[in-house]
Each structure stands twice: as structure tokens, then as C-alpha cells.
Image (cartoon, rainbow, N blue to C red; front, side, top):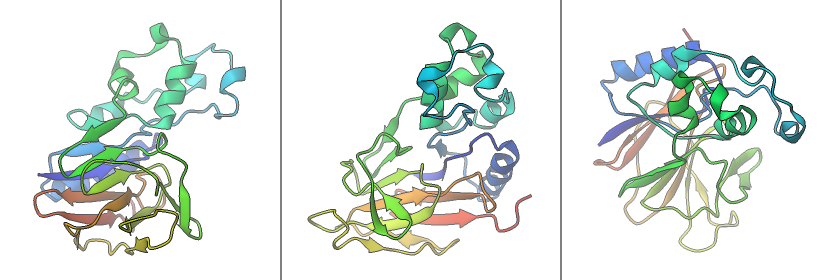
Amino acid sequence: MRYAVVTDIHGDTSALRAVLARVRDQGLRRIICLGDVFECHISKHDVTHHTFTDIGEVFDQEPELAALLDGALVLRGNQEERIGALVPDQALPAWARPVLDAPLTFVTDFATYCHGHALPPWHEPEPGLWCPLDAEFGGRALFYGHHHRSALHRLPDTGRDGEGVVSVPPRFGAAVPLAPDARYLVNVGPVRGPRPAWAVVDETEATVTHYRIETPG
């Protein structure tokens, strides 16, 4: 089974459209979205103080975002959870519900997929590069987003405080084999940004390939 994995769109419809066009060119039809499809305009620090008056104050009304992901397996990110906490249920538009009501995780025999915000506190095995070393997950790999970096880490057999963690620098466009006797953390990379990113996982061949668009459009 091969999946294109995207995450951290944050309301950028044009970047998502560009990434999905590349995914179609790769012949992939199975897509997993790890969340943060929408961008919540209310800071996490202001959630408890916000009084809802209009849905447009909370997030932009972009039905195309949800339409582009129609047929994809969508998971819920922290932006969706914040929107759900701020907007009364009766005010939520029907087009947004498949994203806002999405599950948190998707698990196969090979890997666990999630956004990452609900995982245990993250560590910094490399300066500026955070990852959820303490996460418990099923399968050979944990695919996540949230940190907006394309990254791949091989976990040590014992201990996860950064000691023995091996960083495998992404070689964009080159498949990296995931050894059967090891476990991995795979940061997919964000759709939103100057170089929209995604990853392709081949669960049958046990490989992951990072991609990014060097010149958006």
C-alpha cells in the first residue's frame, strides 16, 4: 500500500492544490492528511477569553480546502480542535465537519499516523529540530506533522532522551528504506510554506520518500 501523506496546510489552498497536483502526477490516489487543514485566527492563549460572535473571526470560510481533500483520509490537528472549542456546534458549516470531526489517529500494521500535537512532550535531539521521542506507537514508523520540518529519525533500541537517536537527513525525491529491526519517527513537512512538502510511504516496500516543491506554482 502506498500513501501520499500531507499535513499543516493552515488554510493555504493554493499550496495544497499544487501539492495534490504533484501527487496525482506520481500516480497516487490514496492520501492521508495529518491535520491542521484550517488556520484558527484565535491564539491558543486567547481561547478561554474569546466570546464567539462570528465564525469568520475564528477561521476563513474556504470550502475548497475540504473539497480538495474529499476522498482523503483526514485526521484532526490542533487547529481543528481549537476551532471546535471556539465555534458552537450549530454554527459549524456542513462542508467543514469532515475535517473538524476527523479522528486523531490512523493505524496500520506498518505505521501510526497522527498530527503530533497530542503526543508526549517533545525532545530536541538536534538544535531547532524537535520530535516526539517518548511517543508509543504501533508499527515500524510514526508519521506526524505539527513541527513544520521534513525530518526522519531512527530510534535507539533503548532510551529515547536523544542518546542514540540517529537523524537521517531527507534526500528529497529519494526513497529511504526503513529497516525491519528498527523504529522511526517521520516528520512529513508542511504544505504551507515557501517550499510545500509532503511524503510518500510505501508500506509494502517499507520506504519513505520526502518531497517538496522548490518553486511553488
